[in-house]
Structure formats: C-alpha cells, structure tokens
Amino acid sequence: MIHSVVIILCVGVLAGILGAILGIGGGIIITPVLTLAFGLDIKYAIGASIISVIATSSGATIAYVKDELLNLRVAMFLEIATTVGAIIGAVLVGVVHTGFLFILFGLLLLFSAWNMYGKLKSGNEVLHKVEPDKIAQRLRLNSSYYDKALKKQVDYQVENVPAGFTVMFGAGLASGLLGIGSGAFKVMAMDTFMKMPLKPSSATSNLMMGVTAAASATVYFFNGSIKPQIAAPLALGVLFGATIGTRIMQRLKPRWIRIIFIPIIGYMGLEMVLKGFGVTI
Amino acid sequence: MQQEMNQVEKLIGVILQIGVIISAIIIGVGLLALLITGKSGYPAGSFPTHFGAIFRGIAQFKPYAIIMLGLFALILTPVLRVVVSIYAFFKERDLLYVVITTIVLIILIFGMAIGYLGK
Image (cartoon, rainbow over all chains, first blue to last red; front, side, top):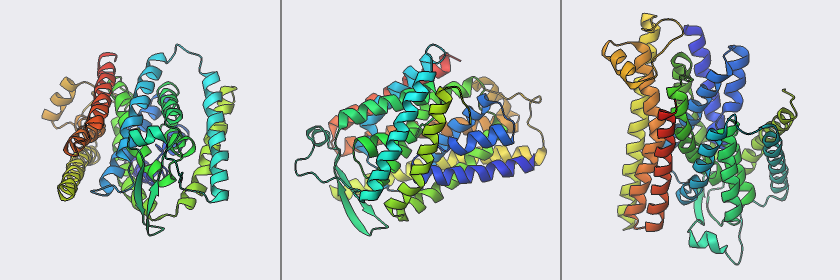
C-alpha cells in the first residue's frame, strides 16, 4: 500500500510541475501511468485526471498571494464559453459519434503546434498593433505582466476575440465529450488565436481549467469514479508540484516554455487524429 | 484607490490559500490514517460517495470518508476562486465583469447541480 502511495505521490508532483508550467491538466502523464503501470480501469483514471486538473489549478493559484501573470478578465470572459461547452459536451456523451471530433480537434492541435513553431522561429512573442482590436478594447482584455526572466514589464494586446471565444467553446466541448485536452486547447485559443503571450496564456489557462473541471468533477465524484486511495496521494502530489511549477514558469524564458510545449501538443494532436481513425498508440 | 486594490488582492490571495490548504490537510489526515491503521473503514473496493455516508463515516473516523470530504473540498476551491473574483471586480467598480463573472458562477453551479442530480 505504502509503495503505490509513494509512486502516485511522485507522479503527481511531476504532473503538477509540468501542468503548472504549461497550463495543461497533466492527464497526459497521469492517465497512461495509472492505466498502464497500475492497470487501473479508464473510468477511475479519468476521475483521477479530473482531480489532478483541479489540484494543478488550485496549486498554481496559491503559489503567490498575488498572481502577476494571470489575466482575470480574459479568464472570466472566456470561461462562459468553455463551461457552457463542457456541460453540453458532458450531456452529449454517448449521443454523438466522437471519431470525427477526435480528428478535428487533433488537427487543430497539430495546426497550433505548427503555429507555435512559427512564433518560435520569428521570435515574435508580443502583439503590438497601432490600431488596438475594438472588441478587446471594449472588454478591457489588453493587459501587461512583469516577466521575471526578461526582467521587464511586458504590455500586450489581444485580438480575434470571437475566434478565441469559439475555440474556447470547442475546448469545453472536447473536454466534456472526449475527456481530454482540458488545458491544451485553452492555451491554444489564447496563444494561437487571440495572440496573447505564452506566459499569461498558460497562467490564465491554469485558472480556467480548474473552474471548468469543477463543473464536471461533481459528476465523477457522485458516480464513484474518484477512488480515494488513488486520488488522495495524487491530489497532494499535484498540489505540491503545481506550486513549484508556477515558480519555475515565472522564471523561464517564454521561448523555453514554447520549446517544451510544441512536442507535447504535437504528440497529443497526433494521438487524437490516430484515435479518430481507430488507432491507439 | 490603488492601495485599497492591493489590499483586496492580498485578502483574496490569502482566502484562496486558506481554502486550498484546508482541503489538503483534510486529505492528508485521511491518507495518514489510512496508512497508519491500514484500514479504509469500508469493504474492499467500496468507498462512500454520498454526503450522508461520508459524514457518518467521519463520525466514526473512517479514513476513506475523511479523504472523500477533503477531495470534495478541493473540488470546491475553483468555485471559491470565482466567488472572490466577483468581489474583486465589485471593489474595482467594474460592473461589466461583475456581471460576466456572476454568469460564470451561475453556469458552474448549474453544472454541479447536474452532476449531483444526474448521478
């Protein structure tokens, strides 16, 4: 018993660190470890992933009393789209054919990986337009953050708000319906579509995925998908890992976060497209 | 005004920290009790998933019941996040975002209610 608790605790710390740096849920680490190494039923693995998403989000929240990176307005505005999407997705489980959706969202992730590669090569991180986007301005989404790695205040603008809102709805739908990509799609919507810098995108995604997951976590909690002996060490490990990950992320250069991010969403995208065609890797 | 805003942000940060730490402590106590006693308090493979069963289990200091309470508290921490955000926007007199964040809270509670009723 002690043995498996320690292993799950360590897996949680790792998932929490990676999840907090990238603004993703960490299911990409947890689900394979629990199903392959522990032989856990996928139902319980998904329940554990949901707990890990919330723990990543809450752990990142408490790392600092005041979060300098977070864009709370972007988070709450887009949260409307993503929670509505998540609820509709959860209701549609078993009703719609998911093969097509796996392919669609997988391709979207691959496109985003390609787009991020372009940003990496051009080194063009922050959007500065002479004419600020009208909708972004009206919703007061443009903001600034202090970058501890670059040691300067970074002002940034946001654009393509309707496109970002739509992708966020899709992100919610995907996480509710397919049970995956709770954070990756959110970062993609902000970074690729709304042209937000990666650090605030990741921090904002961290907050959002916790709120979205909370809406669906009660389903898993009350139908018995959350096993206490798995979820307890995982939650504690992830909470601890996320507080570390948040501190690391603040000090990382944006281009390094991107370098870690690209292969991960590339892998996720490929896995989803293949899954859509019935191939599991 | 700016100073007052910093006060509000600090207060919110502390409230959130307390909420998350309390749920972590409950989970930790349950996990320790499980490891020390070696007993979950329930037949193999089963655990409580309803409030009645969870609170009855806590009264008898059953490790699984304590863990489940802690996990539920953890699930509530993002809700706390949304609630304090409404307060923060209210303090900033940003009515547009008081409305937007309240809509988020309503959708969230709606989703949680579906989870509770649809079990």
